[in-house]
Image (tube, rainbow, N blue to C red):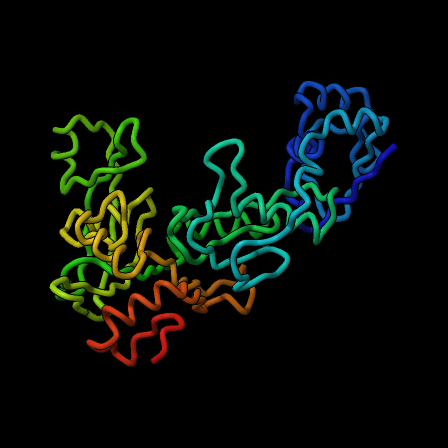
Amino acid sequence: MREIKITKAEAGQRLNKLLGKYLDAAPQSFIYKMLRKKNIKWNHQKASGNEIVQEGDIIQLYLSDDTIAAFQKDMKAKTDATLQGDILYEDEDILILNKPVGVLSQKAQAGDYSINEQIVNYYRQKRGEDHLFTPSVCNRLDRNTSGILLAGMSLKGSQLLSKMLKERSLEKYYYTVVSGVVEGPDRIKGFLAKKENHNQVVIYETIQEAKSAGVTKPALIETHYEPVATGRFQDMEFTLLKVRLVTGKTHQIRAHLQSVGHPIIGDGKYGWKNINGRLKKEFGLTHQLLHAGEIVFPESGQLPEALSGGVLRAPLPVEFQEIIRSIIWQHGIPEDFAVPDLKN
């Protein structure tokens, strides 16, 4: 017989779902059969599987070690708990990382090893292999976008972050360098649709335009931006922008800025090839300069005191800082404008 004690991280889950994570190679029919036959009990009682487990509950598995092992495929998958990215904040419910460029937030194919898998292994190393909660990232950044990544390290943390993201009570700000001179702040709206068979999106100004192009369900998007400073390199002009992402769709910032004539430099999908080619030759730039640099948290009694009503900033990657200094800095960045880690 094996006993599992429910910790705070696992509390609030339905029993059958929790058992499905522990016996992750077992069909639900097997789990329900074991519950009916009382080979699996909850607090020494027969259970249906619909019970909501609480901290301190005990699950008894009257199964042999061989049977349990046969129905577990991922509990001891990878042991490497190295995180690619600096930890900006951590408690028992929430983990916030500064994701580097070149790393997936979540795997796109079966063999990928993304930040999400790294967080799972980090969690298991810290809290034990037999914990029945699986942490996961709550927001997503493109492979070549750096910056703030939020992860729930308990059911409570995951639900809270997901709720705030859905309700848009978290304000998310990005820094980027775009081609051309942006004269002033603006808020732009549009309708986004994914290209069929392409990892790329198209922006339409109006829903009528989208539907005329054959798009049945275009997604309404909204992006706010304000120029921080402008600069020039040779005959090319650029603007450092601070962007607020109101809605959060795939490639939204990249495609939306391109649609108004200010593509992000280094962006191979939506940028200008001639500009990107020259910047690659001069600076070695091979990816878009887009960094999720700041999150403003709402005041909430559900959040830890350190986050409630606070601002969290992620330092810009070194390459990003160097290009800003080469292109933008000499033209002046306002002293009262807080660009993370960008100091004279």
